[in-house]
Length: 498
Image 1 (cartoon, helix red, strand yellow):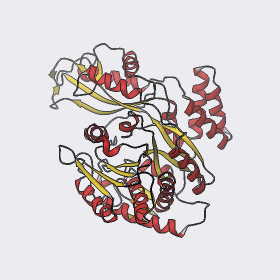
Image 2 (cartoon, helix red, strand yellow; image 1 turned 90 degrees about the vertical axis):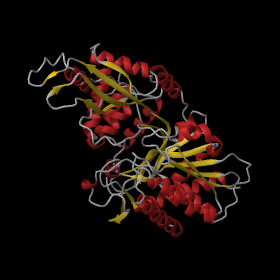
Image 3 (cartoon, rainbow, N blue to C red; image 1 turned 135 degrees about the vertical axis):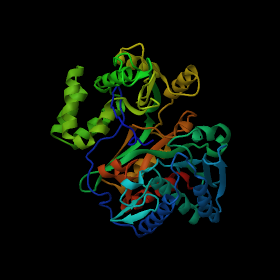
Image 4 (cartoon, rainbow, N blue to C red; image 1 turned 120 degrees about the vertical axis):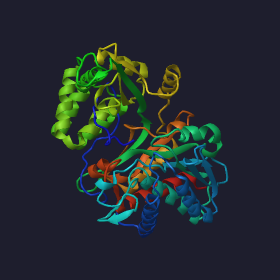
């Protein structure tokens, strides 16, 4: 969900990591491997498909993906692929499923990409956001990077298997998801009634980033094996209603209490906590970046106390200032205040004020710990901290508790091994790393049922591309789409062919 529309962004860290860092810069695409004419031709088809996908305005809200699903049917049906189109009760959130049949000797492999995108502020774009403009080596448009670019890569890889009539040992399932960005009819809803359509041995979804250096050489391929859990909290304050011409003491008003609580949260500095994946990731980053980066990381990893770790973090963030938000997320839970609700008239002191907070928690962290920590920092019993939910508080607590126990995906599966092997063929100077994703995806529908899911943004990225995700002038490099299409096709061929 886009946060640019809201008035306040506060980063609060409570304890945990994510996985992302590395030097990011330069235009996407320069690679050392010689061009493969077939890969070039297939990549061009992906670019053309992406442009068409962008032209469907699937902004959420309202999240209407019906027309895009109908278009995908026209692309897959001539290939003899089994099609399922599953509309949600609202008639807007429509899931599209294409199944390329194998002989059934192995369980299916699934590739999933969300069709909905976040809204745009059209006047702040340099190109029309829903036209799929190609210029200067990039395709521009809402969803180009997140995640219609990934959808185009996944779709074309499956289409190529169908076009070549590759004999398959397992079904290959392509799913265009609805309501991933927001909404109730996402893959969790889909799985409740249609699990048989999406069940698989393992799956690919969005997630980890393929990162390149200033020369455009890919150095790290991050594959998400576990995700942070997204939790939505609400802070509420009450106070007397009054006439704005006779101001009340701020510590008595609803607005005053809420503002004071948020101010405390904004300056709160918790300590660092690292999970094993993050330690390994930071160690690799240090090896690639001798000097200030490595020295800061050494203090973080070897720090015997919180003060030493905090000092190392400051050194690391100073040396990697452009990557600071990602690196902070690597070492901490995060929380962002995204919405406010207060007042009905300019001349009335409101009696109620509310703020919505989106927290991202590490595996192992619980919502009880989160709420207790927020209450301790706010230190005002008159400010109510609870879940922002239409369901009961207890039901929501149990829901998050179950999600917090979702297992991470194993790196010993055939699919992960193929991801790693083929990444080395396409980006020979890169290392593949299993990572924690700082955000959240629809992968939980599979992970909570024991199906391993591997998250990838299947194309090389740099800092500017990442900044454009959910922002203005979102784009992806044409060359990156070429390479990503080749990578995913090789992977599916590896795990699905007879």
